Length: 166
Image (cartoon, rainbow, N blue to C red; front, side, top):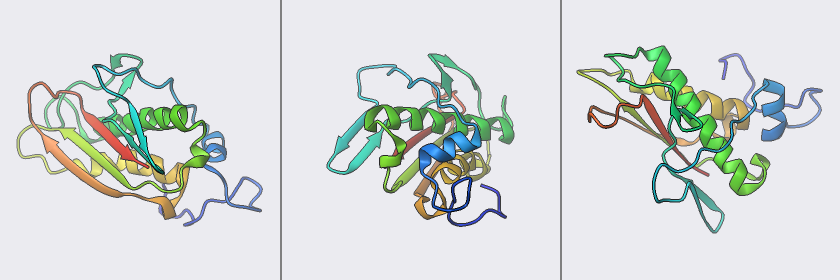
């Protein structure tokens, strides 16, 4: 979210707080179809009032959009966009499970894994791609705690993954 934006997000007419679904419309964001699992697991699990999402990948359908590592094939801007796309996929799964993002009372935690090479230290800037999207949609007052880490495992060559707990 831009630094000059208000802490609370108002509706387009400024008369009341905007809901997450209103914010998506106002921002012109159309969520993608929820991704299908790439293995045997649930994309979302709800226990009580908590909703846990699996690690979301920066995919469109089943196609990876960002392949490579930060500091090697991809730069910070590309990885920032990958984290944003992964978060969009997370929002799509949450909406599918809950019926509406307006049911989200709080985002508890955002975890972002960044595929890196060498001595890269830009993982927090990459994770901001997901954090900024969530703040734009839900407002600053629902910002989550955040865990960001980098990994250089050759099999994890997708630029960013985001796990979101509501």
